[in-house]
Length: 340
Length: 263
Ligand SMILES: Nc1ncnc2c1ncn2[C@@H]1O[C@H](COP(=O)(O)OP(=O)(O)OP(=O)(O)O)[C@@H](O)[C@H]1O
Ligand SMILES: [Mg+2]
Image (cartoon, rainbow over all chains, first blue to last red; front, side, top):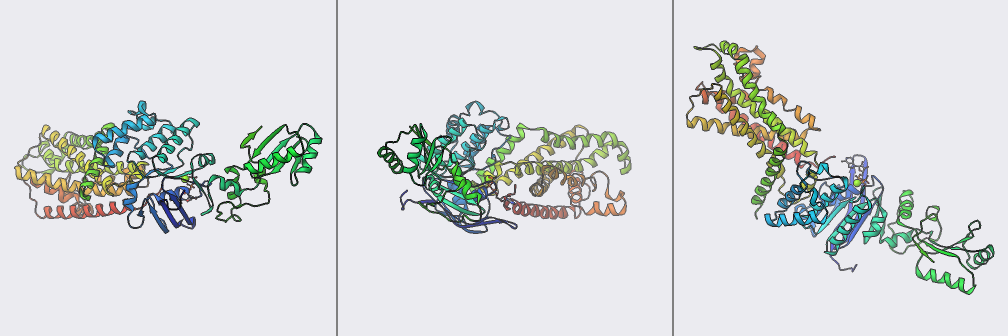
């Protein structure tokens, strides 16, 4: 990401309340052109609300929004002409066939008839819906509906695409198809704003990730930056006998031993340098290690740690911030990679 | 393309969408056109002899009653048809695709215009069928070409006005069921007017209502044009009611449609 890259979505001070309930309490979002931005948050955090505001569907109570160079307040139609939206809830016409739905989109995007037919055929092919083209979407499976929904969004060749939980409820294969489609779009220069419950999805797709909770963005950064926010990464060493374990425990101050498993946890942020340092120490002390695993906190830990303690964590934390203390939440982080 | 061309094109697309939906699920359309035809046959053959006798006049009987009945049935065709409009608008608003339309650069009112034009065409077909059946069972008219044109013109205006009102009712409805109930009053209005029996044959309060409600002047005007009865100020009243209903329905519908969606 270069600093002078044009901005596709810029929102500042976005607020929205429903009655007494404040859903968005002044959030700022910047998405550079051609990148993927993922908005994460627990149920009811306001992800859909944010998408609805940015995609002109509902009005914010405050804040400014620019999408694809158009100002929301003065040129909502300009935004509509540049965006495509696949909402959280299916937005297909249930009385038309899949193909007719796509042709309807072609007409509403004012494509010439032949061009509309060509796009429709191409999208049916791409999303593996050719056999279902003549059928009513009510007879589709959830995954097929989702694919049709996305295909309809793509008919108009939008420059900026909003995807509200695009893969919720999809099987791994269909999820892959969606991910590939999204990657293909980004490769073609499209900007994607997506919300998701799946941290793995944000990890896979997003250039930048923001965590939304209690109306605020509680953390934002790349996947790696976010993971570094959570302490608790460590290298786990396993030994053949207790002597080796004793020796290693003396070598690595601040490590935690697990006598039953003959294992030692050495704090580490999981990068190559710290791994090399540990290996060097083992070498110098000639300690035999039977197994070595690197644990880095994954986004699940970040998610839990940041949204589980709603009042304390308000740091709109930037890159590289790292806390020394270890939290329980992060201690049971899953194994990301295994080094033998 | 200019805004107007785009609006026309989007409305045409939406109209095509509605037509396709009707073609696929014709049950409601058929039912809405069948209702006035059944009413026509029932009133003509079950009640016709008696009601005709009650009308008085030289050759009072079934034939006279059919002539008297037809304008009311035509208006009932209009009101039955717009009941369908309210239902299909309400159904449409509960479809997820409306949210998609709202995020697309399409003419704002196109969704509604598509419904209005579609319903209007549907109403015209209904009226044509009802008039056809009326002729088959012995309806006689002395209307000349000009009077026919005036009749059809008035019916078109009144139908469009009521359709906008029905669109607003459909938008207002919290559910599809409410949408089908609200316009029921409109279907009854021809009964509570001069559609089936003269207003002055009713009890005083009802007669007053029958005389002044919007359907009566339209029915009386159509009756005058087709049968040569006296029109008087009914034509002016009919046009005034049409304008009031149409404008009210139009602005109400637009206001409701601009309201942000609630799910
Ligand atoms: N139209 C509405 N009227 C009243 N409250 C609403 C409305 N829409 C959303 N809310 C409230 O706003 C809050 C945020 O809703 P939103 O749908 O944006 O959450 P979300 O992050 O998308 O959740 P999920 O992950 O479940 O989709 C919720 O508490 C919801 O009840
Ligand atoms: Mg949501």
